[in-house]
Length: 241
Image (cartoon, rainbow, N blue to C red; front, side, top):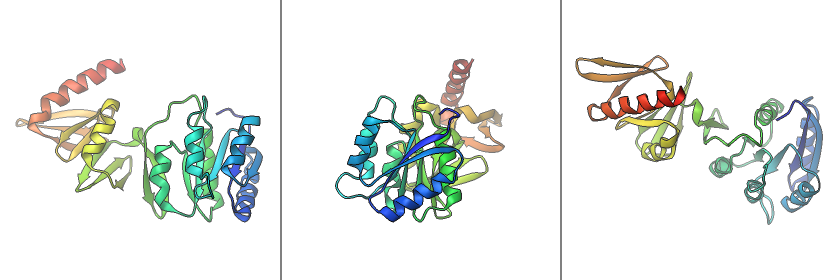
């Protein structure tokens, strides 16, 4: 995203919500132009005539809804960043699958909207989308990017993502994340632990027991996985050189 002020298209079938969001965006000095429309169909027509830098889209709209609009935009050569604005939490996972930049709950607070604008500016259409997981924190849904995750701990049918200074519970088994993130440098080191090789600071071996140090946390490595860990770390370090 360039340093120029943003051109944002707001899409919502409820005019009061549309006007309120446009008003709040207009108060942000990083936003130069705010366009509005009342349907996803109209949004597509407007985008074909004149592209914008980002969209703020309501999820539930009659006929062609916001998720369907985002799916169409994802096939553009340079898809614009999309922020979903909705009164419903249950669509967060679908939004993540469509590489949404953010997910705002109505009524939208101005400070939360400013954070969404910051995320838009940090996102460029030329940058490959990074895998994200939707998590709820203090009643607000946000997205944790894969690169933020240091290690993952199994908790039954859930997984706890450990990031720097925080942890987040997601409804997804560890085995699913292992398969999903294997090519990104995540390795199962124990039946209940998946670790990012990029964040391993040290490998320790004491009395035949192996462990790794990740951001100051020592994690036990299963005996049968110790050789695999060392080999994968060696390959990872060579690839980084």
